[in-house]
Length: 241
Image 1 (cartoon, rainbow, N blue to C red):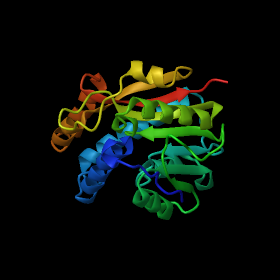
Image 2 (spheres, rainbow, N blue to C red):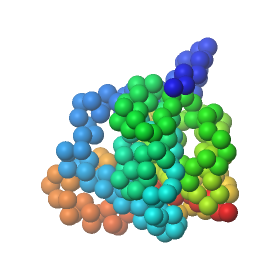
Image 3 (cartoon, one colour):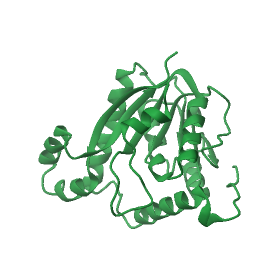
């Protein structure tokens, strides 16, 4: 695995903020906040997966069995597993994460995959290596605009013509978390100026989902369908041939 990039003053490096954000998420995963046996988390996860799969089909990228997939900020490997469930062979899956324990966890979870530890603004794979390159709630944690652009450039570089970026991230700022910043469609266009956006406003805002689903799954679905209180964009950004 690649070693994490060294930096002289962590308090001034963009990676220090990103690490702090993901360490916080990891701690909350360990205290059960994101456990999938909680109905609200299952509700949100199904919404995300449904949106990604629908947009992959719209972009004519299915079936996924022969495709290759790489994920930026792969974390505990949830989306790696999802893509395998959707049909991508484990030997065609790759991922990278800034946190060494995340990369190690994902590698143990999926030993056939190519998992690296490193900085997504300097990816170790060759140009046009993958049919799909995914990022899920990663770029909203990158507050440094230059680093965010560099990550987007690298994602586009390793993507094959005819392939797609898989996108899942929120577009509202979180007033309770200054370490993340929502990304709206205008900024997504700027990050991938040559991409064709096929994004759906998805996912009833998590604070609402966590309160509502336990009382009425059906009502939560109905509210999500209106899109008024949906907080994320999920879908694909196609790299046309």
